[in-house]
Amino acid sequence: MCNCTTISDRDANLFRRAQAGDAEVLEQLMGAHEGLVHHIVRQQWRGRLSYEEAVHAGRIGLWRAIVGFDPERGRAFSTYASVAIARHVWRAVVLAEREEWRAHAPASAKPYRDPRVEVLAWEVHATLHAMVARLPSKQRWVVCTYYGLDGWGGCTLAQLGGRLGCSRQAVHYHLHKALVSLRHPVFSAMLRALLGHNRRADYLQALRPERRPR
Image (tube, rainbow, N blue to C red):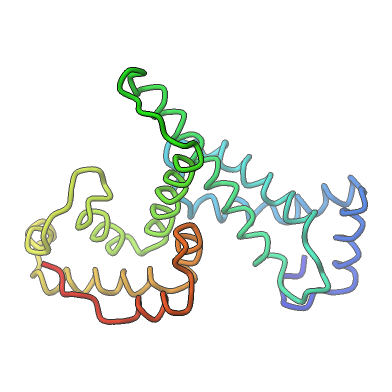
């Protein structure tokens, strides 16, 4: 299938036929883009969700993308579908994490929370980890350990340097590179949308030099 910005008339016709109810063409398009589902799932933070469960959620996202794609808008289907696939995988991760938490939370100690607030909190949690999971391995480890995203609490750059066998300045270099990447809209757009901080002013604020970490 064509992934360029302007798709061919043949491919556009396939999408129209699938959207009109042609099950055979829909299956053909699903098979043609199956690799995109696996590519995104391998990049995603899946929490307690198994790979198979994540792929199933991704396929639902792919199906919705095929049904909703407009060939006339002039954008690549892979770009459009990637967002839909990632969103459905994240939602499945959120639901799995929420069910796990409910299963282990004592009923007497569980305060009432608006379900919408709870879902948003888990979506933010899943999206944040998905962002960090896309970083190179060393940057990912530094970010997770420095900020305590590994569940063990944060630590200083000097402590990280001791564990890596390098100076705190070297650790700061990796942390700075990671934060610059995470600020980019390619990484942060979904999280900013969830938090309501995706205005132009918010991005300009994020580009200001950060305070030097400890």
